[in-house]
Image (cartoon, rainbow, N blue to C red; front, side, top):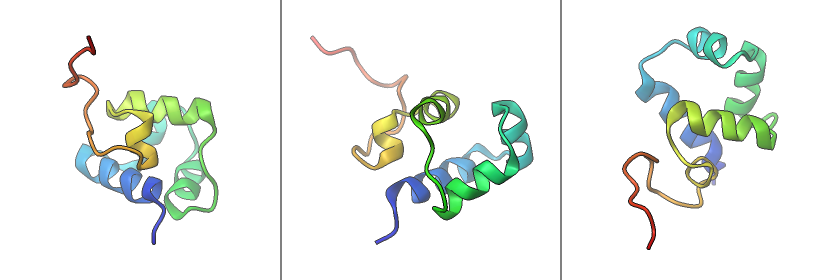
Length: 79
């Protein structure tokens, strides 16, 4: 089974409609770093995971495959 993070990062990049170079520039990361995440060669550290979640407006749990809800802004506060 493919790592959920790899699947999710591919989907989010594709859905963004942006080129990977633009995403890397906006995030301040190298193209190699993004490529390594996409291939599963390396995994993002906690700080990078939080950066990706904020950039794509998803939760870190979504990125890691622990939940299926994508958008943070659509969540209602818990009572």
